[in-house]
Image (cartoon, rainbow, N blue to C red; front, side):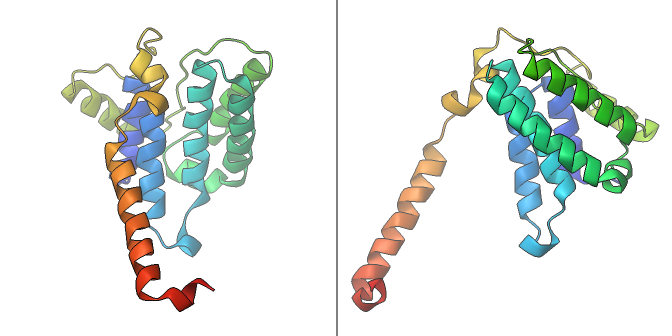
Length: 181
């Protein structure tokens, strides 16, 4: 029916309000496709989550920039948005309203992506319930980890992988010094 990472995105977006993980999940899925086959609709959905993450933290400049890009993407991807079970017109209206609020530096509030497919909505509610979560719950504005996840998360695996790649490049340069020029 729908890709599993997309369902996960919707649950993270509506039941957990973990916009950082929304970005991570869909970016990973988007990157699974070869570069020339990557669908722009995923980028638009990622940008919506990133925009709300920034707004929730009070970064209105970052929020506005991401929301403008998201609106452009959603506008261009009408058929894809609808294939994902979302109401395109209602989604654009919601995003334009949020953009206006961001430009006015109004505080964040939770929104709902307009799910038009009743089966998709039922699946999201059921999966949320199975996790002990309520679909459409409000964001926990007291949860510092949720609000500042990009600075507080464990990045040891990412750092270790970067160091490993750097070491590989250094070893390659040592073996092939002529390739540096």
